[in-house]
Amino acid sequence: MSNDSSAQAETRRRRRLKPLTAGVAAAGVAAILVAGTVAFRSGGDGEVRQTPDVAVLAGPLADQEPAWEACEFRDDGPPLPGADLSNVECATIKVPRDWHDPDPEVTWDVRISQARNIDPTDPDYRTTIITHPGGPYASGLSYSTTVQMYTPELRPTTNYVSFDQRGLGQSSHAECAYEYDPADGRSAEAQAIGEACSQDADVGTMTTEQAAYDMDFIRHLLGLESVTYMGYSYGTWLGTWFGSLFSDNIERMVLDSATDSTRESIQTLYNAAHEGRDRQFRLHLMNWIARNDATVGLGTDPETIWKRYFAATSTPEQSLAALYAWNSVNGPVAFSNPVAYPMAGASCRTSSPRARHRRTR
Image (tube, rainbow, N blue to C red; front, side, top):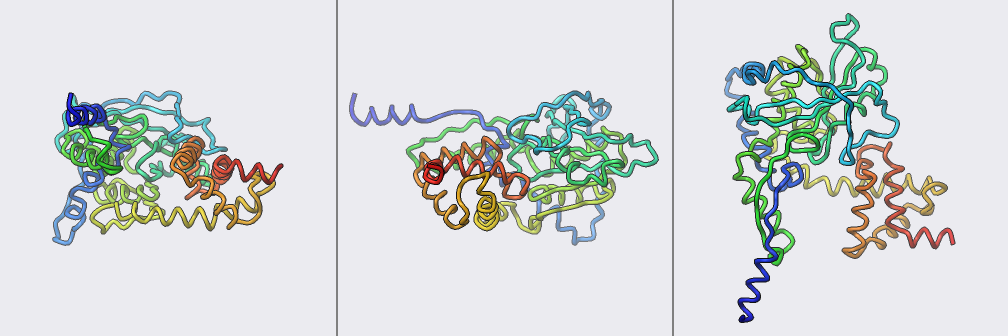
């Protein structure tokens, strides 16, 4: 066999064909997530837009009864420490795969949770809060317990609902076949995902707009005339869609850490996130670690801790190990939630073993 033939055979062996989980390959579906956003939100032409009737669109699916059962929360979005799970149940509902062309035989599964405190027929009942933690890259199923924990004064009169957005967690995932050659560089896989999966019909239903329809369908299946919505970060992008489509069915909306919904794509937010998280890491988390040296054990000078951490994770191998350490305890939650600082501090300690050894020796 010639050298050229050997090289071609090696290239073919290195090509990979594998399924794509739409919720993971955000780069490949970013354009799909926001398709039609600007046109839908223009609203300046005086056109009156009617609220879609999800019960009519869903047909026989609108008659399903959620089968509530014990929740199984996984590592991609576990409840926060201290969250009360005693009143929480989960169910899987069927939603039309494409709300613009609904077929009751062509569906996705959406997994939902409800922290139930009061019957909606009770005179003291006030509202049900549907909430979304942002991302979208991790499970939101347990987030009902988080918002319940943060709003104890509302709890006696309020129920809380969250869900795994289609394409994520325990809800249905779309699969997309693609192939790439690792020899083409680090961006080769992302480019292959974008080129192949942006043309896939199933991936094309993993959109923010479709998720907004899913949320109003959850409202319908719970037998509620209206709900309150609370969303964070990407959840504000989703909330803008939800409010634009279903304002007649929404009592109140809380949008925290809002994205700029006038932008053509949410990619603007993702581009800014790296700088924002680095600022949180350096200015907030490092100071917390320094104040808690007795338990974290990395010293009392925030700048020294910061420099030591990046020195200890400077090689590709060390960086990958640090990534696993952070994800194993869901440490990135700390960038927006100081309740998770102990987990993030543990990640920094795990990533800097030599520094800790020097201090305690």
